[in-house]
Structures are given as C-alpha cells and as structure tokens.
Length: 317
Ligand SMILES: NC(=O)c1ccc[n+]([C@@H]2O[C@H](COP(=O)([O-])OP(=O)(O)OC[C@H]3O[C@@H](n4cnc5c(N)ncnc54)[C@H](OP(=O)(O)O)[C@@H]3O)[C@@H](O)[C@H]2O)c1
Image (tube, rainbow, N blue to C red):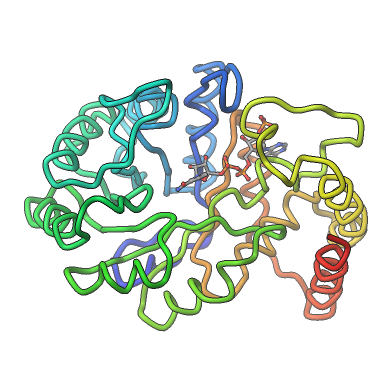
C-alpha cells in the first residue's frame, strides 16, 4: 500500500482510507450492521496496509467510534485515527444533533471521542460541518489549544467552502479538507481541491463510491431506503443515467482485469490534489477489494476515455 503526506501535517496516510459511517448502523442511514463483521473489516484494512480510519461521533451516535476503538486495541500504532466535532451527539433531538463548533462543546466532544476510541490522541480532528453561529476564530482557538495539549495531531475541515477554509486559516493551521468527491460528484475539483493544493492542505474524498452506487452492483429495479433513498443519484432519470454510465465504464475495468469498484477507486485516488479516497465498507471482503483499487495505473488513453464517459453522462442530465 502506497502512502502519501496529508498536506503539511507530517502524517503519512495510505492511498486508500477506510470510512466507518455505515458501521454506526442506524436504521435511518445504512441499516443494521453486524459489529463482528465491522471489526473484521477494520482488521482487514490494517492487514492491507490501510492506516487511516475515518469515523465521527454522529455515526450511529457513538457506535462507530466505539467499534473503531475496540477494533484497534493492540494495534494502535498501525492506525491514524480521524474523527470529528461539531455535531454534538449529547444534544441530539429527533435523531440528529445540532451544528455547534463553540469551544466548550468542542472540548467536551474531544474528551468523549477519546474515551470511545480508547486512545489518548486523535491523529486528525475535523470540524464536521460549518457552524454559522460560532465565530471561526473561537473554533480555531479551541482546536489549536487541543493540538498544543497533544490531544489532537492535525486539524481538518469537512464540508467547508473555499471561503470558509480561507477564513479559518487566518487563525491556525488547516492540514486537510474532507469533501464529497467521486465520478458523479466532481464539484470540488473546480475550486476547493486546487485551493488546497496551492496551500499545502491534504484532501480526503468522501463517498468516493457514491454510497456504493459506483460499485455497479445495483440494478434498474432495485429500491432503496436510508441514506440512499434520499440521494438524487439513486432516484429517477439520474439513477438510470448513472447505471448507463457504469455499463460504459465496465469494459475499461475489465481491460485491466480489475473490478468496476477498483477502477473507480483508482480514478478517484489519482485525481490531482486528492490525497486519499475515504472508502466506506461493512465487510472484510469489501475492504480487500477496495484496497486493490490502488497500486496500479490507468493509462492516459483510458483516462481520456473515462473523461468522455463522465462528460457524456453529465450531458444527459
Ligand atoms: N465528512 C462528511 O460529512 C462525510 C460524509 C459522508 C461520508 N464520510 C466518510 O466517508 C466514508 C465513505 O463514504 P460513504 O460511506 O458515504 O460512501 P462510499 O464509500 O461511497 O460507499 C460505501 C458503501 O459502499 C458499499 N461498498 C463498499 N465497498 C464495496 C465493495 N467492494 N463491493 C460492494 N459494495 C461496496 C458498502 O455499502 P453496502 O454494503 O451497504 O452496500 C459501503 O458502506 C464514510 O464511511 C465516512 O467515513 C464523511
């Protein structure tokens, strides 16, 4: 497994990271999960050389962090742990926490995450979503303070715009951005990713498989619940367009003797400015396949072919 520097954080992360949102396992999101399978998936990731594991308190309201914490016991030195603040689960109403990046809340959340993860340091601590009600100066002071105390090693922002990232950088270092990015969600390539490249920040691409859609495992007649049911890429004409796009991509993958999933991961991981895709998984077999998405290269002529397929699909919508 190849490693890359995460911006100028000094952290070297694997070219593929493991996402653990689905391991939180709530009915409204990814449906039920088997904790034993989740732990086996995390162990498989470590066995493949994947060292970055991404979680958040809100994933299963603490459950994902607990599973990660349990899975890494005895293997902490093989792992870089990324977790988040800004959706304090202790304040959850109607199933979802409010946005809050107030300093006192961040300090509380950090202690709770450290406890659930059963560790004394978080390698990468990200603000999950911007909080319009807290001045970013206050948020950054809290994060910089945590870093000075050795409770976190690097600071990241997730779901922030270029302008919001630029504002935060006035008050302390931002080592990395986490943003949606995939073959069907390329918006960040227009501004955020170039901005991060220019300023030495790493970029973690989340939902790189478009919540499993880009594995090519779904069919026209499939119906969805949870997070997929709410996602426009799984609905109506756009869904059908995505399925057609995947059928055009399939022969490209086959020419390399790779699965569609592996082609998609390779394409994502090799986009300029992307440090690593954070690929979600529920099972060890998925992690094994996903780890095979890197360590090989797509030829230039096939990159052009893929670009044309993506552009044609976009033109259809
Ligand atoms: N910062 C943020 O706001 C934010 C938002 C979203 C995600 N994230 C992070 O990014 C991670 C990944 O995003 P994501 O979970 O939304 O979506 P994703 O990585 O695009 O898709 C993950 C899902 O695809 C399916 N899958 C994965 N590998 C597969 C394989 N080899 N074969 C067949 N199916 C496979 C699994 O679902 P099934 O087994 O259920 O089919 C898995 O849960 C999250 O876990 C989380 O850590 C962060």
